Length: 481
Image (cartoon, rainbow, N blue to C red; front, side):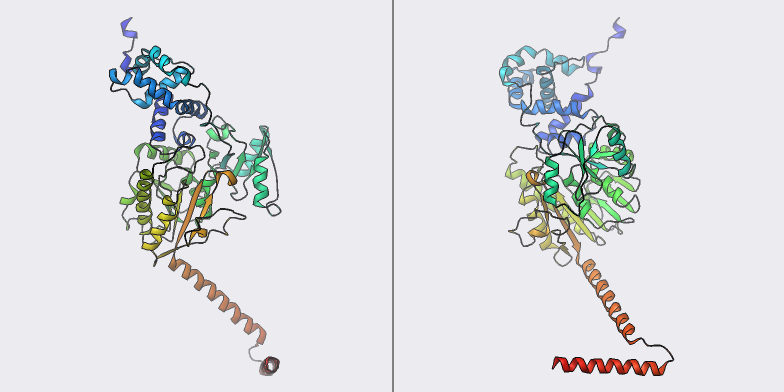
């Protein structure tokens, strides 16, 4: 029956392939590592899409060459090259089934593609899947509690490896991570709500994850919130908010009180941010789909804290092995400096926390140095070197302020490579010092009055006490002489 047959062009491309092609485009544009981009995406079956993308990237050279040699692009100029690569990887791997036009078109070239790809195509991924970092899981305290998550994990065969952080050094703790057994997990040494599992532990189909009770978030990306001064009632802007991990952590840190404005320029990423904010019950968050650098300085006159975690080379993400061109790094650094400059320009802001998942000085210390020069009368860097117990890595020491910044090293800290700098308004530091001085002065006054023990209306007692004080003072003078 002709009425039962859908035209080819009306059959949609399966969502797996559609999402994978979008992620592949971002990966090739150096927007992040495969794993990071998959976590930020919309596709729920993490293992399936991650495996397909790893296979695609691993065989990228063979696939691209085969597609060109097969004349697919010559004969089908409108064929999306990223979708073509993903579909080819599936076809040469598990096999390709479907009735949508792109699949049916590609299958016409299957013979040629197979002959050109030949033995150059590997069905098993190697370097792309190599990942020795543990799996970090942050408990979403906006929906549940740490004790409840631990209870659920214990009931599902997991065992918490306990330790006393007051008796254990950070170096000892890093050894505990390396020795994690198959069904054991740890609480993090620095981040209370963070749990640590063996590498590649699958959580994408775990009910705690699908219910948003836990969030898959690397330790490194928790550090900006951890070192900030936010507290319940704070007014915060998250300048580059998507996909929303940091945003929801900020909301949890202020216990859903105060106000968080989460800003994302890219529409697709903004929609992900919107969805996750609702799903994670971050009720104090307002989302905005706009360019942060165009946000009027007088519009949010109450903002106290701004987090700037801009797009970067992602060179600190341990699965991202490609060299980033110098031109690309310079372009990113210019963009990052523009964002940071705008954040520091808000008249009411007291703290600006700048962070990247890059290892390059150009995106980190150089951006910070330029901002300090421009805003030297208004801001200075808070010293983060003593903020985290036992921390080992700091900013590049060729910069005067280097040690005031935090860095993470994948090979040592067992998390993504990261950089954090905290700008604090100088007036805030002065107010803090003035407050401390006032407290000290008050204590000294109280101590003086206590020593005198002046009792109102008792003149004899007063004279006696004053006499004692004078005698004591004379004795001290004799001792000094």
